[in-house]
Length: 228
Image (cartoon, rainbow, N blue to C red):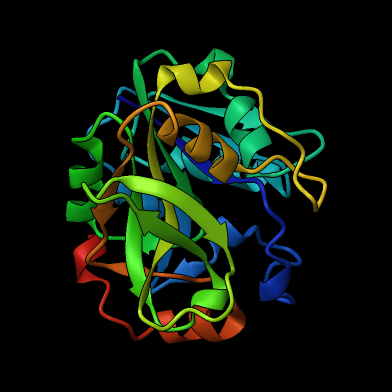
């Protein structure tokens, strides 16, 4: 299995701290967020990191990290969404399956190992404010039926997409539509694959989102042992 980490964003909600440091390199308890993510990966043959904003800093970190020897970067010259970032890695991936993670949240090592065991799947975690997340709806057999972005009126808790996926290599053959916000979304790739066969929902027992200054500051004293 290969792995892709999406680390091209500007981290605007974490300004001013991201004005000179890319979000994936912000420190959580002395380690860059990206270091936590790579360190929690199951064994992978190749790691591909999608970069754009302050890309040189991310590449310098990758050259110094010791988790994965076989790493590469793909530079997005004009970021156009998570789906575009995924498909930009088409030529860099060699394996039949690929794990894809956002470059900003901490996920438990055991959760990623269980995700790696399915042919295609998505990590999910219950949330109390469904309208802030992409919410997963299940078929009777427990596999994914659809994802609805930020739905209103649902009673909590609901299962949220936490930004961890396993795709078959055929994901790179998909054609994604342009979303209403003018980007290509990775969730449209999920929807197309889920329409073709069982797309497994894998429960994430540990998920530490770091999307805002408040969440980042809280992470400095949070229990991060499951991600070690």
